[in-house]
Length: 256
Image: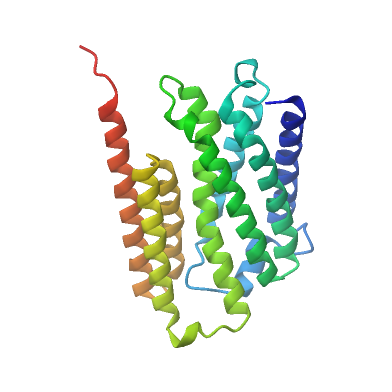
């Protein structure tokens, strides 16, 4: 990775963390992200504790940024391939926060879709690091950050679009909100299973499961059907992840 990209990604990470800290404490346009979310409740909104995963995501992203400065990683092809995607994701992340805190819900849905697309690009570019033999450091510093980041933003995009539709007065074409929520959980579980088996990635579905469990916790007082559906979808995602973890362990050579 060239020096300009290393510096840009470090600056991008610092900008994202700074703006997110302001957003979490109400220092960005006067309200916290959670307060704005509570203004438009939906049946796919997760419990507040779920958002603590951002701390994990940014810590993993810091590892990725630091890896770019390691001499052993400067010529790493996965690092080179993911660098532009990561910087673009930082721009979309910061942009989304400003749009979200401006309470422009429809616009925020488009911005978070842009964030999702950049993370898909980074995720796909990072897969060689996940599959490289005897390079666990590369896995933890390059591949794992984007598995977790993309997993969370996948669900966040679903939630954001739901908020935008709710705020815009969409009637669901006459289909009950609970039915739409269950359908979205099915989609999330299918995406998690595909990532587990096609991309040989257990960490993406585990992140999806984290979000789905939190949705169930949040919605159990509003609809038991929605809560059970969210937990069932989470169970599917966890099962897929465990099967893939078992498969990965089975491929490792056993000591004799």
